[in-house]
Every structure is written in structure tokens, then in C-alpha cells.
Length: 91
Figure 1 (cartoon, rainbow, N blue to C red):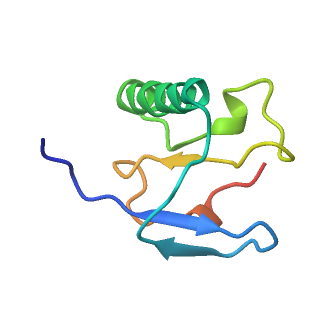
Figure 2 (figure 1 turned 90 degrees about the vertical axis):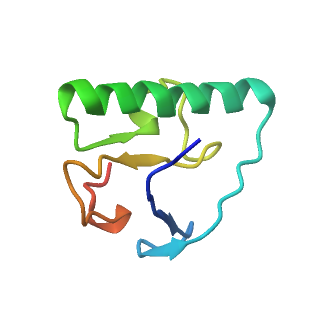
């Protein structure tokens, strides 16, 4: 399976500055991992059909809480080739 180039950026809990990273780890139960996976898939479809610039996980899950969850922002590289998380509108 071929996968196009992509980049990962992270923001520490106490800092608003993003940094480039080469690895992420998601610690969650299988049901939550499936829901996050569906978020990725559904967001990719929305980006294809609606040309959406970026999508926040917190906007898709009504039960989202910054105390219990980490924010995930997916950026449509076709719409914004230079965007980094720190440049995206905050919630």
C-alpha cells in the first residue's frame, strides 16, 4: 500500500507552540480507537467533497472534554499546504 507524504505536529499541554514530531502514540480502548479511526475516515471524505480546510475532533464528538481527551486537528493539505496546527484557528 502506498501512502503520500504527511507530517505530524504536536502541542504540549501547557504550550501553544506546535512542533514537528515523527511519532505519535494513542492510548485508548479498542472502541475509542475505532471512533477515532472513523473520525479520520469521515473527515477525509468531507475534505474531498466539501473542500474543508481543517476539522477538529472536538467539533465531531458532543462528549468531548479537554479534561478527558486530546484534541486532534486534521488539516487538508490540498487546501493549505503550509498550515501547521499553531496557525489553525483555535477553539
